[in-house]
Image 1 (spheres, helix red, strand yellow):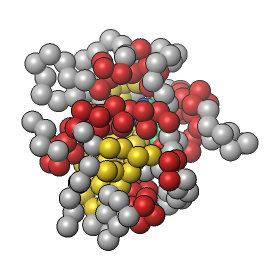
Image 2 (tube, helix red, strand yellow; image 1 turned 60 degrees about the vertical axis):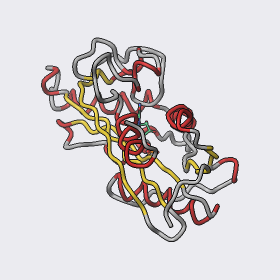
Image 3 (tube, rainbow, N blue to C red; image 1 turned 180 degrees about the vertical axis):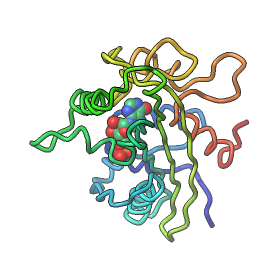
Image 4 (spheres, rainbow, N blue to C red; image 1 turned 90 degrees about the vertical axis):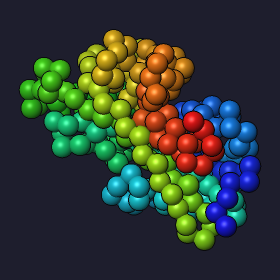
Length: 214
Ligand code: IMP
């Protein structure tokens, strides 16, 4: 059976994501174990969609631990760049010595937008996408997708958060994700039914379907 009996492995080695996922799961009484606690290797993300990559990560962790596993594959899609960097969002931050530097990645996006003279905010629209995959060792999987629309600003603003947060201004807000507290980024505005961030929206769907959340 595909139940959640309390223990779940979070199949991510990304510290920013782990922190966010642990915070999102905590209120539901799920015991989150991290991939690092099991010394799980990081599988190659060879998929071409967020769903494929999320499955690769969650299924590998489920098989290795014999527990249900949850992964998140996410990225930023700039409309004027045909949805790039998309599933390659993390790769764009790679440095020659194999580390990740998101200032380089944000600059790369900015350079490409300037190359095509995308300076007007209307030409700089983008989305953050998160797909959560919940997989069991036998290969059964469920997917929950969250998206948030916004505009890419330059220069980067704010020191909070991670990745591309400082250049992403969500629609209807005057602060970038890099200027928002975790509560502002992942919470609901008073009166709003949906959370703000792509990851929180995907989690909301997961929690409503699987954890009895309203
Ligand atoms: P992956 O899901 O591990 O392939 O990595 C996705 C990449 O997208 C991350 O390394 C971040 O750079 C970026 N990303 C995903 N979600 C967010 C977010 O909430 N804020 C900023 N960057 C994000």
